Amino acid sequence: MIVQGLKLTLVGIIVVFLFLILLLILIHLSAKLLKPYTRKEASSLTSHRPSIPRGKSLFEDNHKLTAIISAAIAAHRKRRGRYRLP
Amino acid sequence: MFMKKQFLIIACFMLLLFSIPLSARAGDLPGQKAKGQTLLPPVSEMIVNFTRSTGLFSFFSPGPGNEFKGVGNLFMIGVGLLLLYLAIKKNFEPLLLVPIGFGAILSNTPLAFMSDPGGVLYYIYTIGIKTGVFPLLIFMGVGAMTDFGPLIANPKTLLLGAAAQVGIFITLIGALILSEFVPGIHFDLFEAASIGIIGGADGPTAIFLSSQLAPHLLGPIAVAAYSYMALVPLIQPPIMRALTTLDERKIRMKQMRHVGKVEKIIFPLMVLGLCIFLLPTAAPLIGFFMFGNLMRECHVVDRLSKTAQNALINIVTILLGLGVGSQLSAHQFLNLSTLGILFLGSIAFSIGTASGVLMAKLMNLFFETKINPLIGSAGVSAVPMAARVSQKVGMEADPQNILLMHAMGPNVAGVIGSAVAAGVLLTLKSLAV
Figure 1 (cartoon, one colour):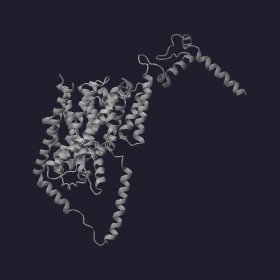
Figure 2 (cartoon, rainbow over the protein chains, first blue to last red):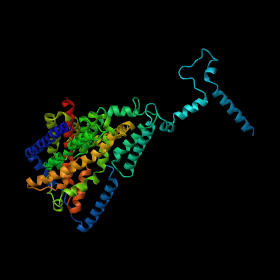
Figure 3 (cartoon, each protein chain N blue to C red):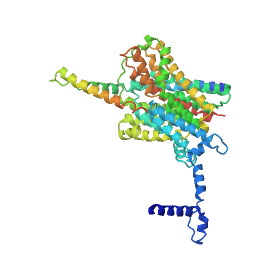
Figure 4 (cartoon, rainbow over the protein chains, first blue to last red):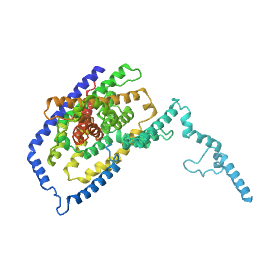
């Protein structure tokens, strides 16, 4: 029966690799075909990025930012472990 | 004083009333028989019967045909409690192990017959798990939660996801070797395939495949799969460190490109198309996975996507856990095969991890852009735990190296890879001669 297992293993590994290599090629192809769309999207993302509002000093802004980031980290730590995939 | 006397008299009267056989009293009024159950045995007999119907009695009295059935039930309740302890205290996959542990306790409750035909757990199992519906619904939810962006940005990581599936097949051979050489363990090809899929490190896939190929092993396989998934942070790091040099662990990967919305919408359809043309047996798993993902990425059915990744997956997880727990009965769990399955499961995870890391090293020999071999271990699905482990081990070597997003690529590739492997193993059903 071990020989049967080896046969199954050979076929199985070949199919898994073949499937994922074909998928790799397809992803490359689609990325190439859709390049214009992706580039447009990426450039619109960078051009719409909100700039730092002027008038406030950088120092003042940093304080606010620190508070926001530490609050976010605290919230994340609190939530951690509850949203794991089953 | 008077009250006490009165109470005694009433009590005596009541006792007399109940101790006279009901048949004698019923005989007094011929022609006035009520329908249904109207007769009860004398109180003394009732009390004896009642003690016979307690859990305590059935745990310690030999049952018909099986002397240790009661003790076995008690032991399995202990296993259920152990699972609850691991989930609650040690935080091991609590979302699954709490329902599974509780299901195990309920299904081993004597005289309640919850997992026998007609019992509630029997229906949950038969409707949801035996048919394969629950694991597929969970897969849909997982698809709705998964972002394939890192994979699309760096598709080479698909090879890592494929390499990590080698663990599945080596374990399959391991199961066959065990049944050949260890007396008391006999696995056929279907059973060996179901045990091997533990190496896919993907709960729903393991449950789906074993419900189709070897339903009698479903309990131990699901418990092994989820326990080892919880143990990924302990199993993987020593293997990863042993197979890599410090310099390799310090490799920094270049930032990923932006992945467009259209690419993300096309991706699930592409995978499904490939599945339809090449491996239709994997279509249930891959189909539901990609359906969930399309709902997420198309952004026009946000309500459905949110339901699939929250309410629906939670409801199904509860039912799936209870259903799996109902399969943890003493006669199915307490045997040598279970020990074999637990042993093979740990081998499966270790080999999957090692082959992922080795594949990454192999790829570094051929490709110009180097990848950090630590992300190879994330190829054993276990989303997102395995990716976190890559990040953690990477940070030990270089605290500023952020590998998490890069590791998500092989991580989600591993989910596709194990679904494909399950599809191949499902073809056994039609190949078997």
